[in-house]
Image 1 (cartoon, rainbow, N blue to C red):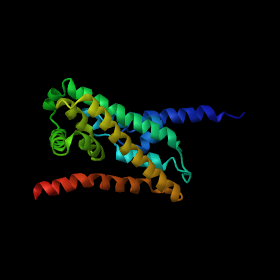
Image 2 (cartoon, rainbow, N blue to C red; image 1 turned 180 degrees about the vertical axis):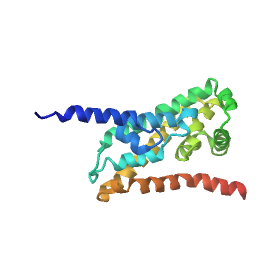
Image 3 (cartoon, one colour; image 1 turned 180 degrees about the horizontal axis):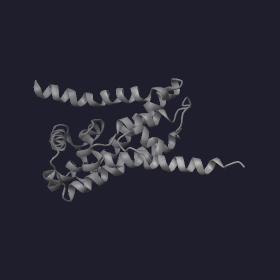
Image 4 (cartoon, rainbow, N blue to C red; image 1 turned 60 degrees about the vertical axis):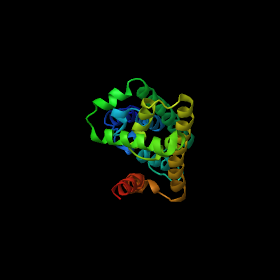
Length: 221
């Protein structure tokens, strides 16, 4: 008597979802695919307490790689789905972060005991003052840690709603689509690129931290 493979496959998927590690991009993509991209990017873009520890750059770039035709290991993702989910998560998360900041954000930031959150909030205020709302909302998207607190801080400081909505959307779409398409381009040009996802993620982490290192070096000077 032959046993159907479908129940076994369903049980494997359920076990995979239960065991998912939200801090690990490969685990999130394997369990939830494009929907996982939407949820994580949404949280990272505006939920200060949760989003501060979630992957952003290190999720979007591998997601783009896994959309390429040269990928031979699951999960294989659809490019258009990842692009849409990344954009929606980034823009919606930024807007929610702004609303959180506008309605009680000052008290929330004051109560937190996380030094990294406080330091990032201070950098966000400096960025908004130095470059103006438009440039800051676009540039801040590309800086890890900073982009999570930038939107609540903008709400706390009373940035006009129309100005914030327009430029955080521009920054969110530009940041998310650039990383996904960069991963897709690399995945489409290098055969079996998914075999090297971990080293690639490490490179993305180093590159994404460069703005913080440059800022720290300038501050010391």
